Amino acid sequence: MNTWRNASLAATAAALLTLTTACGQEQGDASPNGQAVGNAAPAQQPADSGYGSAGGGYGSGADAEAAEAEEAGQLAVQESKKLGKVLTDSEGFTLYRFDKDTANPPKSNCAGACAATWPVVASGNATAAAGTDPELLGEVTRADGTSQLTVDGWPMYRYAKDTAPGQVNGQGVGGTWFAAAPDGKKAAKNADGAGVGEPAESAAPADPAGLSVRKDPELGDIVVDGRGMTVYRFTKDSAWPMKTACTGDCLKKWPVVAPMAKNAVDGVTTKGFVTFDRPDGIKQQTIDCWPIYTFAGDAKPGDTNGQGVGGTWYAVSPDSELIGASR
Image (cartoon, rainbow, N blue to C red; front, side):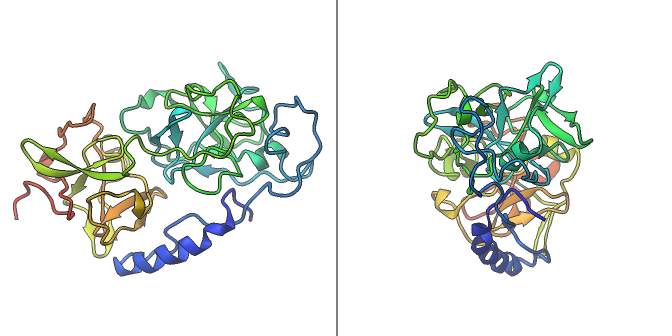
């Protein structure tokens, strides 16, 4: 079965599998896998068709099959120098919206061959990104009966030619496809299609380090994510074997930290730095094999409102120790 991901990630999957086994995880691949879709020669479409023929094609032509819709998991927000804040799925892949869709009422006008190039994001287990309004998330039933994720009414898609997290190759394609901002609007900069034909640009965290260290006046050195938000561990989780005790409604308060590359880390241990394939399908970053989270109650960088909550949630030191927890 085809999926929207590129087969070139298989080597990464194998490497992460080795690391994950060292943490006692009994699951398979810890990274994206599968075959690319829509990489055959584009079908000839009118230049103004708006389905991507001008900048990425329709996929494999009129008979192209749409990729199976995959869930987004824990959404995240990344910062692009050209596009501003960009919404991504749990693996860091950019989410897009289509001008020929409608938000009120929500309706998708991308099906068949179009959906081979622009894979649909299933509603499933999507969780709002930290600091965003969860009420903006919704779903729309497509013509084939499947359910698609919406943000403020706009159906969400990925782009088949984004082959690595952070890429925004779909921005401006056909003058109708745009990276989605966290509120469902078009990413603020370059949203008029001026980016068509420009070199691919990766969306990166505002802070070059996906994880870095901040000196807190009360807690000392603590780990923060790329937005400066405090990172936490849950004492009811386990690293050996790797398990999570935060599921369902717990994740609304404690969003997972999405997977990232080791070179996106500054000053934080990369021991046991692997992706956790959670039982609920969400992919989560770990350090020293411990799953890590942020806290929905932290409204801005520097907040540490999650510290000590329930006697089970604690900020994390650069060497992955719990700060302030009883030993």
